[in-house]
Amino acid sequence: MLFFFAGDGSSAAGGDITFLTGAASFGRGGNFFLNAGSGSFLGSVVIGPNAQLLRITPPVVIDNSYLQLVNGFDEVLLQADPTSIFSHNGLTLLRSESDYDVIQVDTTPVTNSNQYERLVDLQHTLNAIINSLSQCQHGLFYTRTVDPNNNIVPRDCPEFTV
Image (cartoon, rainbow, N blue to C red; front, side, top):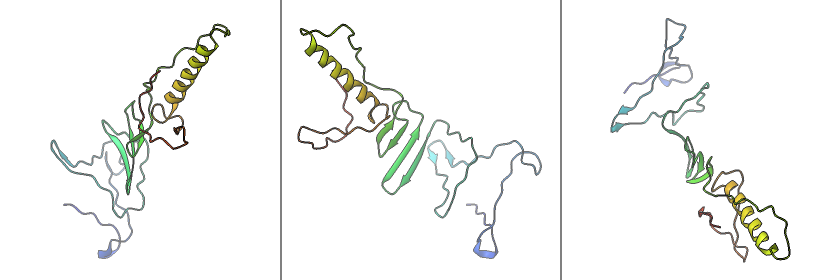
């Protein structure tokens, strides 16, 4: 273990610790790596538990991994995954791909003989658009499904079928 203390005396209250990389005292260029093992022997890089603030000057690059924020039982995950860019407690809130196909709406004039079928087609198309933009797909807005008795149906993100 390696400990760095800043501050006054043994209490280490206050003070700064500065690491510079690069040439001389200017700290230009060079990289600073925090590593916690390799292969199957990986540890963690932990800041805290007694840290008031972690400030990182951009850009921040997370390579082949994700950013996870945890507070109690809540977890927020930000990752480069087109099917789940942003999620909260395992529920995808934002994605860039949708599994829902939106049916092209027929543009022929509505007549007495086809009005029911055209209305059903419009209903399916509207449902497909709403589902493709909801939290289970794109995540543009939150939708809540209710049954005929106005009871909320749990969000399990079922696949939409026409």
